[in-house]
Length: 193
Image (cartoon, rainbow, N blue to C red):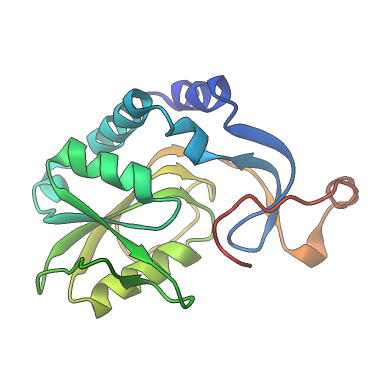
């Protein structure tokens, strides 16, 4: 899938939103990608996951023992990546603000993990999830995502394979351009920020 084809999928289901959004990272943006909407159709979600899988080098795909994703945003695409790779897919939750495996999920010591996210902006959630996998005894060998909002600038400490890279400016609260500050803010993400 080309990046334009991926964007077309987001547009076709109303998943590319415009306005004033407070992102999960705490930064502000005039655009928001509502991945839950693009993933609500199982066939489309599966197609996107297979397209992401094709971006991951074969030598990395062959090492993956399990797919892990952070809840909430990574749940659906993580599950579909597990299906695409023929691997189990589990997820991290943060009931107390810190990622943990729950619901009886566990990693075998030394398990090779593919981390799967929906959107990466600053990489904060990804780095926290990677640290959680290490605490749980696994090793993240790579990460993939539907969208890299950093346009290739983010450093996760592991190889990163996004399906699409977008250059959408985001701003700290004290750096908002006047035209964005004039629009009421919406917080569509899953993280309290």
